[in-house]
Length: 545
Image (cartoon, rainbow, N blue to C red; front, side):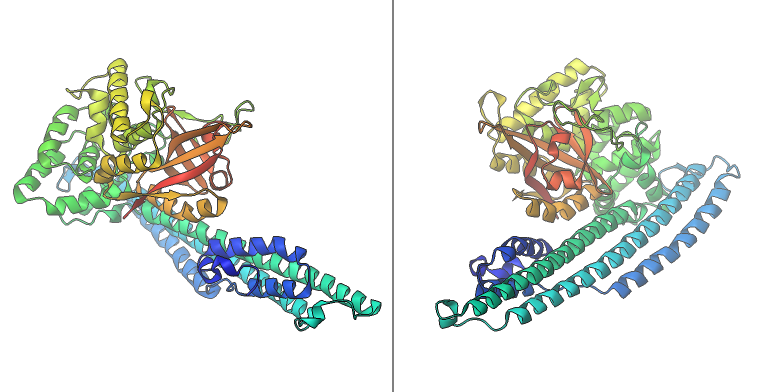
């Protein structure tokens, strides 16, 4: 082995990120090789990397199969839509009193989502097949150049060959020319191999991201319970808040649908009858969805009955304002550039209750960012908890001043719970892990595990897991940092709450959300979600199933 012996190459090459990093290092070191043996060692190190794996023909076949389902789903939508437009009578369906007309409309939307999912899945698979084919060719061409370099260099020099005292000037010139030619060929070859590794790695991550997203979007099938009819499950999966883009503001996430379905199946006969009564008596689809979300968060039927007594009969706008801390606007993904003064995105959504932001210390100034992010995360996944903050003891308050007092008190409680610093300033990673697992895990069913991601490779490697978590509806806290010219460190906690294509939605406990790109997350562009003091993500608390 060569210069990378001490790095345990076989371990380093187990992952796409490891192979990518390995070849990137060789792209730098090969042109600097000082002698033939040194260069041959580096060529051998490059050839340790396996070629991009995968069968492009199989991927293309799967893509065609998915695409073939698009027309079928489209036909289903047309048939259902025709029924919806015929003017159905005001009759009830299902076990939770769903209007038949609403059920048919939801079915039409579900058919559209199905068509979109098949189309998106086919597109992802075809893109992966194309990229993989490109990567395989790049790798093959690169390996051929590496072999040419080895042939040009010839066999390794022995001990006496390394000296140059006995060589003629012509022999020295020939050796130098061979080394120069070998370096050029090897540099070109390893460049192609690295390009292949990057192409394959990026394509696989993009395909995993998109397929996970489309799988999460197949929402109706997430609730596997025999306790509700198909129309009930479809309506619950279809229900969104009143404000913001419907597709970004579904009340029940994919995880909520699964957890609430399992919880329904575990209820005793008596509790099941009481839950059925609550659902049947709900005045709006949103009220039903929040009842099921509270069940998904782990609340018992007795607590849900008390919760329903506070929200029963409230309209969709009131429910969303009190029970959903994060509302995503339809134009929030629009790129409006950054503030030249601080590098922050211009396009942000303020997240507030009656004008009072969901912000650390109420105004974004306190150092309780970790605790404040955790409070908002818990409120996102548990509507009963959210109502305690927004609605007070009665659950029916609309008082932003009282909300601010309760919000700050809860932030301070969690700050102390996580052993945060004096004067409400800062919390270490251990404390953040403790409060994430105590305050969020019971509601999501997933423990949170710390991953330090202090370089681009580790951030790139964890992205698919982050994106799967948020596609399922599980918020992902992370920390960012930066350093002034004098070495002064700045740190801040934020949270990833959504994903669309190659964009991540970030909640900043200064009281706002915005979207950044995967590239921003990987390569130190997180100032867009905060400001220029905080460019680099360095720690992620990832939900573990």
